[in-house]
Length: 470
Image (cartoon, rainbow, N blue to C red; front, side, top):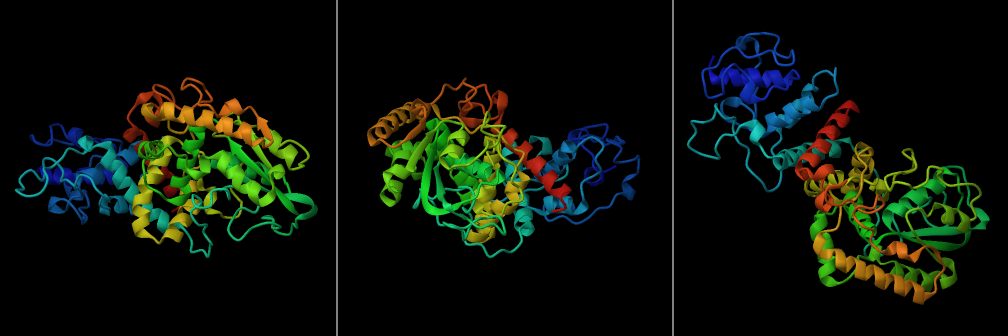
């Protein structure tokens, strides 16, 4: 059997759900004398090469797909649950037809088949394609699928909140597009005239969790002037939450390390993380007596008490920052895309943003993040990324300064202001550190490759999108 026939059979093996690597497909190596290929996962069924469909492919020599595309299909097959059938033909076709977007290595031919070409990059063994290149390819596929899965909507997407940082994302009932004081997101419910309205500001994750808990508990908004709750915690966590939120709901593309170093070099906090500045702005609008700072990882008890809510909020509490109220049926808001994602999941969204910002207009980009990717990645929770070592002292100094500013401002403070200080990396409540969840600078658990962790998330996401019929 010729190497081209063997390669054609391997492509069909992958399309049928096989997971055998190219180098193991056959009794010899791809460059040696081909023999009878193994049935693999039962996918080949002992057929001869003449029974395999050939197909037409957009890349690679002799009508064969490129090595990276073939390896991504093989990895998808290997990631399927036990007993699952082969991947849908349209999904395989989409993967094989997609060229990896952005900067990176070019598509490379299958080694042993395209070795004779004099031009272009050298052929590659699919298993040698770097995980980062497979992530880039998967991001291109996911971006196209996500853009096609998002229904057209007339949504008034917010302006960038870094210019208006005190109107927070996920700020609970009435925080979505077109809402404001005196509105209620639950159809048929009217605000209570004698109850105060409220605003949630500060840490995007805590604001979203608190707003969700209030909504799920049936808290109704009021028509009286609002009370403002400024939410904060360990400053390193607040910074990570702001970055995660900007990536997952605003579609920005800076990496975590670059972003936090950028603010450290300017010796400034991003507007969403500067709690005293947020409190000062709100105090100028509603009066200092109506601005409360809630400091700590669990603001729900204080929030419920200050807003006059009867009964507990989210009995499960916030023992883990990944815990959140289940509110999948809420009205759409682009701000609700931050789901407490793991560092690897946020990195995947960041790579998706690089494609979506070219593929769709900005307003639709945010709709895709809020309506599609947030649903796909809802289960990919985990700790935020850890701080780079060189900015740890800067973050501690800024946290100490903020603690002093809060004490001098004399706002009502609920919780311990010392909670603003960064916790040790081995503290279960602190950010992920080397060797722990999140790994160095937010890498995967156990300090493994971040690229491999992101690829694992991408594979699960592609499979879940397939299972959902997208």
